[in-house]
Image (cartoon, rainbow, N blue to C red; front, side, top):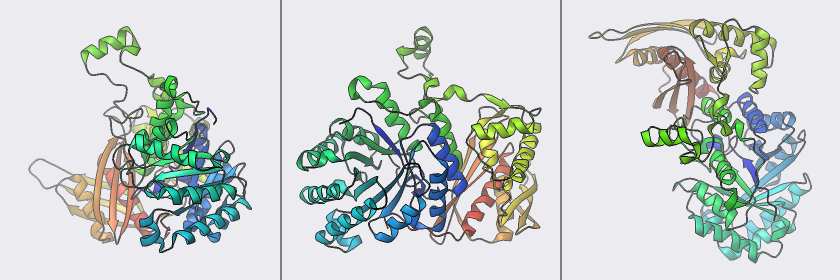
Length: 512
């Protein structure tokens, strides 16, 4: 067993399965560059066979990222595995992660296969994948609820076929730390060739124990890879949180006795980038990356921290990147400084035209806001209006009137397939009036299931970041808009969500 803990990040694959968290290729690449900066060992870039868009995202990331292993998920069939191998051709280090369900419930109800059929399928798939790449990970889906004897049989067989990593997922978040750790330990003790593979844990947070279960799998079970996501992003209650696992192992090295290769000074930047890209806001009291994670309101605590920091702080805020949120640019900054800052943030725009569009937006923002932070720039380049590619709907301008005792009114000008239209409406407030004005023309029929406002940085001059989640015909999308004017940000977010609803890109659910 090694004393190195491998960090396997699946923000771009499992994290993206959160309703509305779907990302574009460029957004995925931007996050992958930040994960490389974090020195993540393995980046699961997507599920190449699920759609052409996901294939292109995996391929683009595999071609661009040099310091991390790039992984694609695939079901246990030749088509998926071939597609994954094709997407990973340009990778310095590529991995195929293939899986098949092994619990009695999943085999009977979902796969409609017998245990013997699943056994053969798993063996053949790993053998096929091993002929295409040297690094193959196998996961028995719903492994924690699988029969121990059957699981031992199938995992021994796939290791014999060349699987280099064995991942045991708690797919539905049912595990309890001590029991899960013991489960991994028992598997490793009972399987004769268990020492030929690295053992991995993948835990979901349905009972709030994903991080605890993962660490128990490491400490009790002997696992040496943890699968996790930035901010614990993921479907239902989310996945194991990368920042919590990493800081737990680093802070309590006396207990775990393990090293992690993560550059923790980039954690906060990664957290903010994922939050702004997906529209999933980080709760203030979230460990490590929440706004209150290093705040002390109690007078006794404040006094203690001032006298000796370690009285109440077990980690330093700057160790995870809190002090890197410096003012970076202002309205006198030139185009080259702006372009350099984009590169520093891992943002690559495809053309000079896109850089010019982004720079024009930056200058416009700098005229309205004296201090420009990294978060402002990320929000700015995440705005669809910056990109050259024409979306169906684009924000142009708006006017709204709100007065105590009077019903608010808004007039919004926006483009539909390049043509300007004007729409007006009353509403319960200026935001309601603005969104009703847009909907009166678009007539999408979508239901709004979330409206959220978040300040990008910490002053009244801050840009507001608005997330709008829409649902229509079973599809759920998030739209994000930012502007110093909350009403304008709301209109941008609504139009962004409508654009995503219009997108016809269909994706196959990994676990479907």
